[in-house]
Image 1 (tube, rainbow, N blue to C red):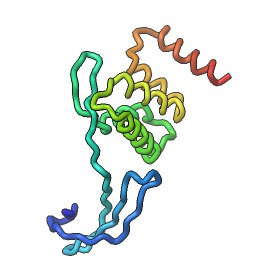
Image 2 (cartoon, rainbow, N blue to C red):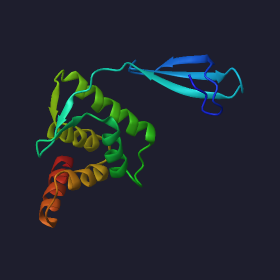
Image 3 (cartoon, rainbow, N blue to C red):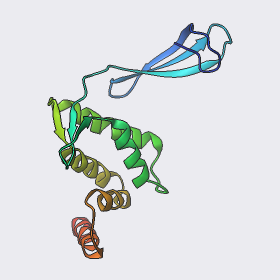
Image 4 (cartoon, helix red, strand yellow):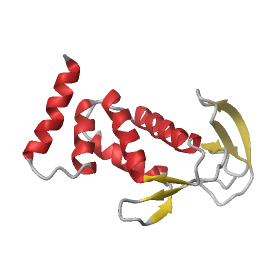
Length: 152
């Protein structure tokens, strides 16, 4: 493993820990040249499905795009990066568990909204307003009314 501080390629593992769901291994390493420590994450690489977009284009599933959308929706909300990463991991696991070579972007978007609805209603509405392309305030208000009805 290349040291991020110097170009040396040799390091030793100081500590290894599995994530809660077991899908990720966190390793603390020490460079054998400069002795600085750094953290790496190891994950089993599974074949990712192709996402079929609304316009018919196809692209490889990218969890980073989901993470960016969720981060944007959660901006200035009391949602930690750890929680966001956990949500992204759950969505990625869900996509892989579908076992399909192709998955529709709409299915992924609905799953993201489901997760955000449980996490933070403001982030959910923010994401939904972009994802569903609300055309006017009436569509936005309709979504808010549904949220309020569910709370009662």
